[in-house]
Image 1 (cartoon, rainbow, N blue to C red):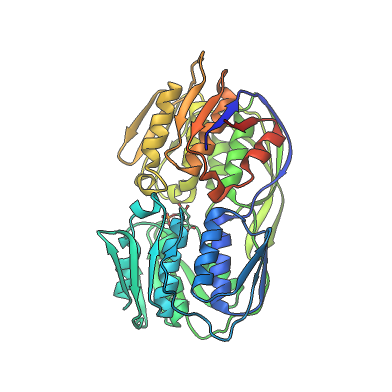
Image 2 (image 1 turned 135 degrees about the vertical axis):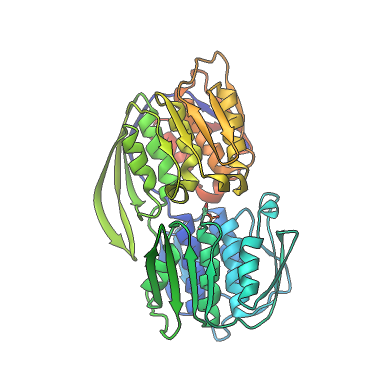
Length: 436
Ligand code: S3P
């Protein structure tokens, strides 16, 4: 799918933030594991949560979806082997969390994905799962993943060498599914949706901050409480709207229902430090998660230095933050972000090649990028390749707010993995993005 974004400069209106992708996937995995009648609202009806949903149904769950509402039914037989390969599409979260769940339950399965997912590192999950007693193999560190049934050992403790919420969640799910105690140390703080959701459903999870990181322990013994769940809006999707609002010459936008979990919303502080005019209103808790409305106006931004523990908090927002940096005065330097090289694409490479097309001064490093603000005037339409990565595609479509002749972005179909209504939402605010 090739999209053309025409140059527009004024954005206004009120929009709803789509459901959180990470939380939607966790809600159906944990709901299926609870094996109770559970209704989930605000679910992200996007390709990643949908591939996780069908993976769960393939191993015996009974989950149905109607628009943004999901119903999970209690079953007689909790889970069963699937004779066919389980396809997680583009979703790293889907594959890594399902590895923990399947290994913990003790099923036999083969997991595959699309071209991008088949290139993503999986040893980070299979190594600790195998140390727990599971039998998980991969192909030189990559999918396909083969899982054989084996018993999980009790009281496993793991110090994660990289800060990854997917790895942490996979091990926690293996512990919960096998009803064994498990403890994980994360070297810097990562999104804590799994811990919050397990607590919401009544399980015993302890989180203690230690040095710059956190130790998370699951202690078996409690039964799942029967509760419904409301998925808050996805901060990572809201980030596109927020930065569009900041860089547009004339804008005033109001984004409702934005998830503001402190382990996810560090970008707000960074943008405020850059000079962003952002206000948060109506904060409240929903199903254990903080949510609120975000009000954004056009702003003059300045460059900042970003490194260290905050990187895991803003990891998914760095592509769109790079567009903000390209519009800011001065230089923004992002380091300690090597993980960007193993996302849906090598995001540092993809950001760098897009910025080269925009003729924005930048320098790539192994673990980051420095960007000197200032997009020169272009007399032609800019051509960008998204590298098949949803967040790269959306980021460069938004750069059209600063490009006189707009931008064509190739390879955009993966926008449907995380933000199926992206075009409608942006166009309702005043952008003009259309399929070519
Ligand atoms: C996610 C964790 C992050 C993030 C990804 C979603 C999750 O990945 O980049 O988009 O849902 O747990 P890592 O765990 O690899 O850091």
